[in-house]
Length: 350
Image 1 (cartoon, rainbow, N blue to C red):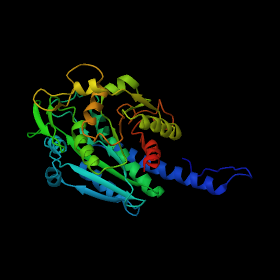
Image 2: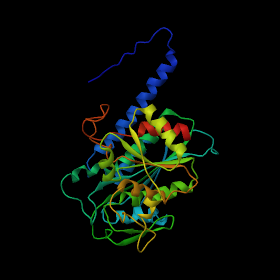
Image 3: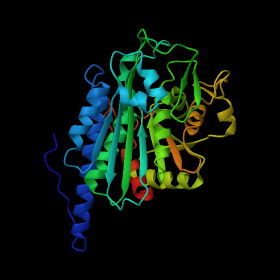
Image 4: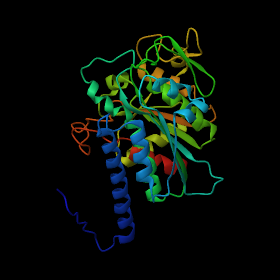
């Protein structure tokens, strides 16, 4: 166990700036480790309610304002995806809102959205039993957004930022979504649910719509969204999806500075066309095989206002068990990926 680290500096070194850098690195590391702990906790001990409670506790004294919506509020706000996915579980969903105001109120915030599925068995479209225990990690996008917001607040960045985490379980209870059901999203678009195991995008669609309504400077989302991204990039690279050339450049800058590996992935109009529904505006799975991570991103894009810069990060391959690929992460367990990059992006867009 490391108990102390000594830094040897030359006589010409600016000690104050080095001390600040070390302090900032410690804060970010602590927030990454907090997110890792959330992700590693078993599903019976990390429910949507517990996730919300942990966020409230961690935010105390940080300058971060946390608001939690219950099931009734979620329904009232017309979060049809989050509400619908939660119906198969005996546990109520939560929608966690984290607000940080470090600049003038007139300054637009940067928004972060994270998928918070505390356990995902696939619902009626149930997953194979092999490896299902790892689906406690399906909330890592949400955990990492919580870590990002805590880091921003503790660093006292002179920006405005808001984090949103839709949280639920995806279970095959008596009221669970059935293949073929149609849900109505907050922005009014209808979605056919042909595969209940493609639920992450359903809870994200409402959160992205809500984030867009706040007219932010930019929106970044993180989710363990598709196995297709793992097939394409393995466990070393996070896939990023955006059509915005400026965001692409800034993602590269932020990732290089943070030391995290991010690879730009395609998203285009034909990916959107693949997600059109037969009996609704959209389907939650593609009508064609292949490009699953791109079609999923194209689905999410339909819930972001066109005038708002947005990027989606698929962390399905990098959210956990990546230590053999990335030596700064534990060999097993949650990685806390993208928190460091998101903190850099927050400073660019906040």
